[in-house]
Image (tube, rainbow, N blue to C red):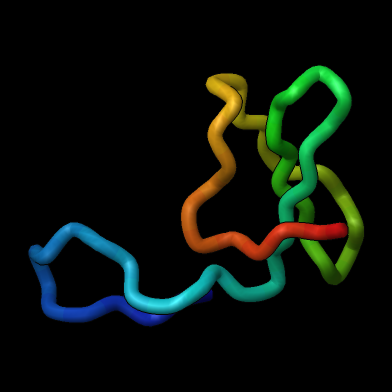
Length: 56
């Protein structure tokens, strides 16, 4: 996955690896595992996932 900085700083350093995201027609963002292609999670508030690359 991604690397983390000091313990307790409560944030991520770097991108999330082996993951991608795409926006579906309803406006929600879907996170996908790039190895298997399976959908993992849907974000319903209309904002993309942080640190996850976007598919075209």
